[in-house]
Image (cartoon, rainbow, N blue to C red; front, top):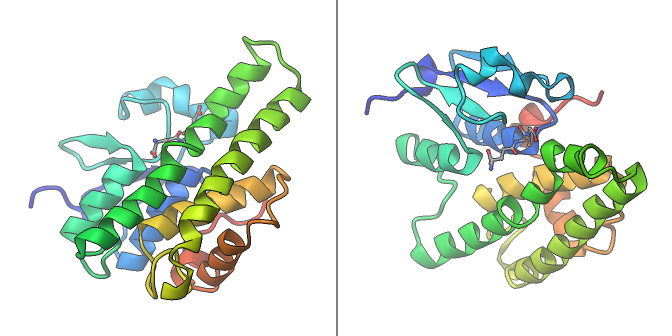
Length: 216
Ligand SMILES: N[C@@H](CCC(=O)N[C@@H](CS)C(=O)NCC(=O)O)C(=O)O
C-alpha cells in the first residue's frame, strides 16, 4: 500500500454533500487526514489557481496524497473501504453490495449532479433564468430522485434502520447529505417516510454527527 490517509491533505467544504459523504466515511473508519484545507465554494475558491494546481477538477472533495491527488467521493470511499476495511461500508455479500451501490449511485449519479453549485449558477448566470426557476429546477430533480429512492429503500425496510440492514453503508453516506441539502433548499420531503426514517436514525450516530456541517 503506498497511499496513506495519514499523510494526505483533504480539500473540503462543510456544506458540500460530496465532501460530507467522505467525512462520514473517515469518521466511521476512525482515520484522519494529516490536514484539512477548506475550499470556500461560496467564494468560488474551487476555480482558483491555487486549488487547480492540486485538483484536476474545480470541485470538492479531493485528497492530495503527495504523489497524486484524486477527486470523486465515491472512488475515494471505495478506496478507503479497501485500505481500512473496518467497518465495511460496502458489504462483502455480493447481492448486498449490489443493492448498496444501486442506492448510492441513484443519489450520487442521478440526483446530486443536477443540483451542484455549477449547474444552479449556470441556470441563473449564462442561461439568464431567475431564482424561482432555479429553485423549481432544484426541487423538481430532488423530488423525482427521492421518489425512485423511496421505492428502492422500501424493499429493504424490514432489514434494519439503515438503508440496508443494521450497519451504515455507502448508501447511508450518500443519503444523509442529500437529505440535508434538500432541507436547506426548502424542498418538501415529508412524504418520503423511509428516507426520513433512515436519515433520523443515521443522524443519531456519533460518526454522522462529527462529520455534519455546523449550521451557518
Ligand atoms: N461526483 C463528484 C461531485 C463533486 C461536486 O460536484 N462537488 C461540489 C460540492 S458538493 C462542488 O465542489 N461544486 C463546485 C461547483 O459546482 O462549482 C464527487 O462525488 O466527488
